[in-house]
Image (cartoon, rainbow, N blue to C red):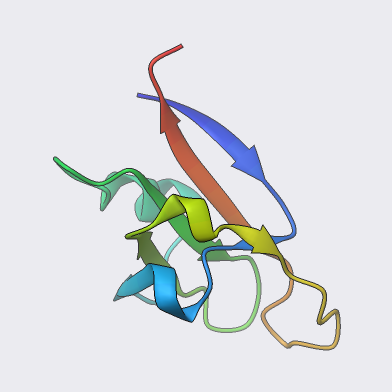
Length: 79
């Protein structure tokens, strides 16, 4: 799939479920299977990967002191 990329953004705690940690951005995207609309991936520290269960909740992430900052949101697109 093609992906839209947003940073620093996240899907918020109400719009995500964890898929794994220690992942690269590509590995995180690969975990986004059938029915998955997008992922939230953290660039530093523990490299957490989440499935975005509700992409409409996507929001700017402003805590630059977070060890894992910046987060990225990748949403699938048909374009």
